[in-house]
Length: 352
Image (cartoon, rainbow, N blue to C red; front, side):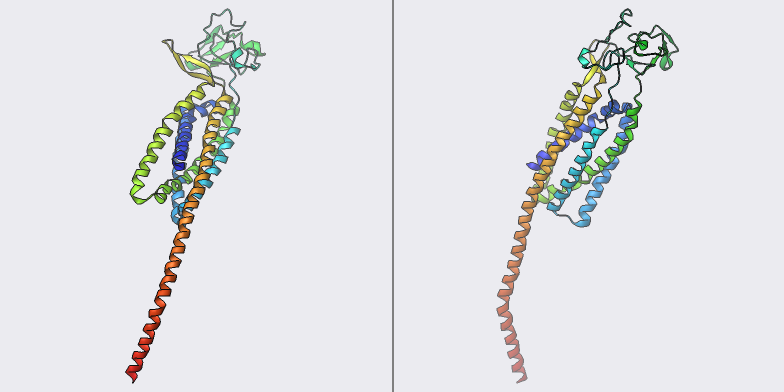
């Protein structure tokens, strides 16, 4: 039962983490979803495979029994959990969006609920406050649209379009009052990406290292006729109770951190355009840390139970073997002596 609960919690943390990791990297490190998926594919699968392969090699090399395997898996997971806590250091500031996260003067809003997309600089423009077509002002602040930036003219077309005479851009300080398409870059966030990828590589390898020993515990702790049934139950519980609910409650909690929802052409709610990156990080990493902390506790309990069970069995086997050997010696000493006397007598008779 402890093993099944542990397996379910591990699947919850793994599936929830992998499902929303591209979105997390996009929001935290200012990279595209496609690039985030590429990094995850290059790092996650190879390092996980290398960790599992090395874990199997350690089992074979040192001929680990069930008690030693569960201790090995427990230690590796505890180390991985410590690495997981370092994720919280990979933080990034919230994207500065005028009328959403900062006011039109560039001052951070004390509460995002007080944000107002319409200001005096764009009140006469007749802008749609629910439209999301961001432009980056020359002051480093992102505006939800060129209209909300108060821009009155544009030059160029497509991605090369430049907006001029943006009255709202001038409110936050001196400048040439222009804006370009797209969100403003966050260079400090992008600089932290290599640190995050290195941490992800070490964490994935460490978790994979203890994956093979943990799986082998099923075969060592279950009777031969029940091994297939045990593997089936373990797979079913992990996939159903771990793989299905995790994306649902992860997604529901992450949606609470959304600051700006897109609007579909039919009028329905679209995808989230801007997240509160700090709240996103706290929800995503905090939920993962809570699930993995529960796994750590269950690992310790499983380690105690397996060690106690197989330690007692090994002790009984040793005592039984010693008893058999001593009984054989004691029962065999009489006949041996008698046989030797008979041989001596026989030899004596022959000599006579």
